Length: 279
Image (cartoon, rainbow, N blue to C red):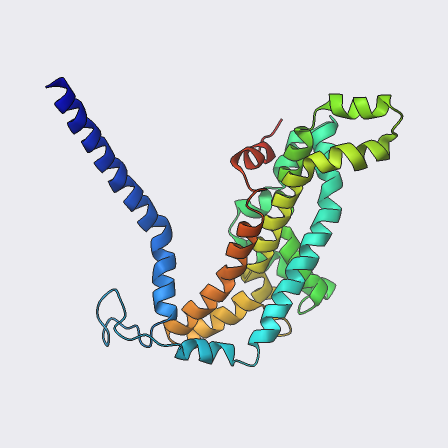
């Protein structure tokens, strides 16, 4: 009887686990699956085509989107801006991240916490205020203005995560390199930087993806001279059926999936947790 009760209890436990797992998968992957269905649907309307699954499938909207004149230009522009933003953010924020990890100075926590300010307020309100300053400086509708807007949202990733990576490198390893004759630069180049590189790569990935998906700032500062994929996608969503917007959404999410798949070994819970610790 005890064994039978144990088997029943295990069966109930597994059933609950299966229900929770199903709910989890639907919550996280349901919207993506719905977007994929809409992207490959010929028509997707609650009036003309009631039901969750489209009745007819087609690549017509993919053909429509891929034949848009500004699509190739917007894709290349998005990747160029994301690449330059990542490089500039790396050059500017990496020394700051090392300073936060290795040195103590007055108001250190305040300065480190200040990098969150760009993500602590509604983006559009912040961009409007910045747009007024950019207008006075002649940066509206310029490439440097777009880069500055993109870099604004990447400061947290490029500072906090590398700071945690540098902090995880034990000082004993650096002192051992000094003991065998390495100078400060050689110690940083051959010991500290390689050990912190996984965290830096994680920060670069998040910075690149954040820049690639930036829309509001680019729309306010860059239009009409600079239109990235998200900006063009907004226009398609407003002017065309949801199927065309879903195609753009799939195109926009593909780089995210590819990058996270390629660098999966660098994206771990330990690295992320270390990067967001404040001391």
